[in-house]
Image (cartoon, rainbow, N blue to C red; front, side):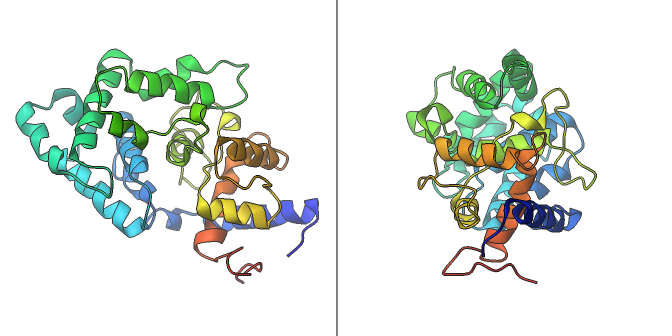
Length: 268
């Protein structure tokens, strides 16, 4: 399928509107933070859920729901006030390569973030200037604060680093959840002082495949350089909210198999 620039814009808009619907929430990991109302609970639930968001979505949601239950479904209060006895069961938590030791490190780091840094939002808000064109300075500052305590080296792989050219798909997805907002209510838009225009498009095997099939991405590797290339291309369609097209790319890849095994036509 070959598009003119105008046709590609229309196609992306159509698919964005198709998948950016409230019905999207139920079977997506974003359903976990949607279980909460308090801002801090949403942030923490979203960050932890995004952290384990690889593999089958059913398994991700099941494990994330279990993790929230282990924190008494009150993640902010648990993180700030848990006792050694209360955190002990979390040392048994496992989702693929994210194990109990990683979980303990994440909980400890988040306690430091909320007790001593004003929370996740505050770190991003204070580290992104009006001159910044992307979210990378915020990720850098958050990652630095997150690992300022003694942590296991193995745990660092679960919070990828764009400064090392990682695509950082999961942190970018978390940030989309926190910063984007539109009338459908899928994304939360809690961090109103940070513009969606600085966000980077989450990039994984599905979105990368679709982006290349549509001519939005030339780079072969799914790395941070590819993220910036894709995001810059999407900004030509909507400079203020480029990552809204993540819905289109994800939906085309996961639900329609677009770009896979010669499939280059959308489902009707």
